[in-house]
Structures are given as C-alpha cells and as structure tokens.
Image (cartoon, rainbow, N blue to C red; front, side, top):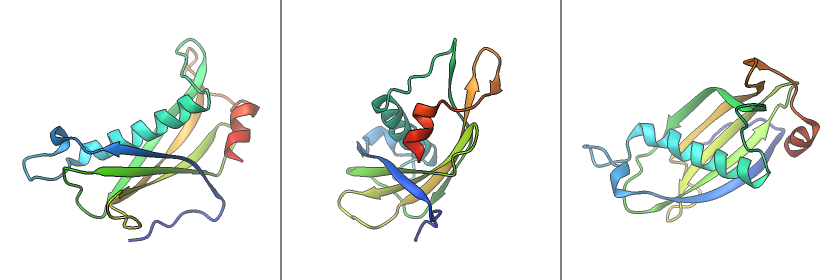
Length: 139
C-alpha cells in the first residue's frame, strides 16, 4: 500500500517506538486506538525538539482532525518507525502526513494517516496566524 503524499511535502520527524505487550487487544494485534497514540508520540517528539511547547495561557498548535488507515496488523514484539511529513502551510494551519513501518519489515506500510493542525490563541479559543519561526520550519 502506498500513501499518496502531496508533491510539496517535507519530512520533519522520524522516531522509533517500541510495541508494548499492553498495546495488543484480545485479537492478538495492536488495538486500533493505539495507532493514534503512536502518531501523538511522534508529533510531540517533533514539537518538543523544535521548541514548540503548548502554553495554555498563550498560543500553540491544536489538532483539528486526524485520520488513520490500517494496512497491516501490528503485533508484539517489535519496534515501529513513525515518519511525519508536513505540507500546505496556510495562515494558521498546516497538513501533516504519517507513515508507520516495522523496523524488521522496512518499506512496508502498516498504517498511514495525518492531521490538520491549527495554530490557536488558547484563552480566546480562536485561530491566529502561525508565528514566522514556526512557519519557516514547514517551508
């Protein structure tokens, strides 16, 4: 399965995450809700590395929507590689795209997904323009 990424995309983060025994469900594979946790781990890792810490009394990123397509079942034990790409920066939002592979099965997509992220003023609960330093990271 191939993820159709936009032509203008930028790889911004790659992280390896262990699959934990407790990530599995009664069917013996990783529960579908955990894929969103893996995406969150990769996203937070990237944002922390670039100095984008959410400030409840200020501004920061918020996920407006998220999706995940499940291509193959993940099972314990193992490690996964989560890659985040970004595209389409606008005034206050951008798109992200994610791929998940196993480290022992490189090049095979187990899941793909993405999200629309909006920069917001938390106290006012409304979108505001992304700061230039962050927009530069997306270009």
